[in-house]
Image 1 (cartoon, rainbow, N blue to C red):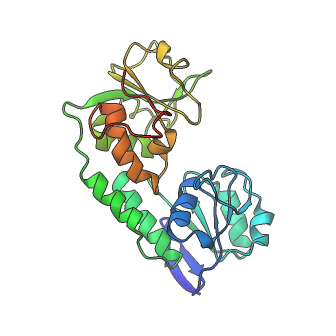
Image 2 (cartoon, rainbow, N blue to C red; image 1 turned 90 degrees about the vertical axis):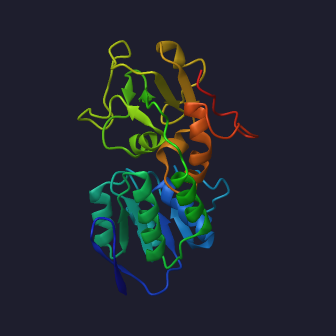
Length: 266
């Protein structure tokens, strides 16, 4: 085995040939599937992209079936520092599996992290990743900058707080998260007691906000967007670079076929 170094600076003993991969993160599953789909043998129940993915399901990101993963005999297990629990990863390591952990906190860092992760699977940087890097390099931040709140749940109301990939995406677009300095990553909040803001970003996951469920609570204009474009890192980054400027800022390309799941700022 040749050791590689993951994002947590751990040495991971990866076989010289990788033929079987288990992914514990939807974004990483999509990244591998778009690059070399035949490698995947296991993924979580939440791994919804690509839609035709046909692999063994190993429960969720927070409660993976360790025994089922071990039985799949993967050459490498892909995980993420935020998404997955250390006890589960340690259990997989104790079973003798190579566990590679990513740590993705911003847009540019996502490109480098994904490149390293795919290299650990003995895969070259794919075209979709180069395209995403180029598209985000061309994104022009809003001037003047916008100020947004990003609810993710109601009853109780919760929103995106500090140190999140979503916040980094918004920052690149020229949008400041008004709860970005909160000590919690996903704080509770009172809609009537928010810092000054001029935009409400309402994703369709984990809570499914709709035109009739969410915007009526806020005085500021609302934008309904795909949560995948705000939170996933992988092939969705290209789509996010195309879609989010028009959805959140009213700039960029015009909506096209298949865009019914989102609405423009209103």
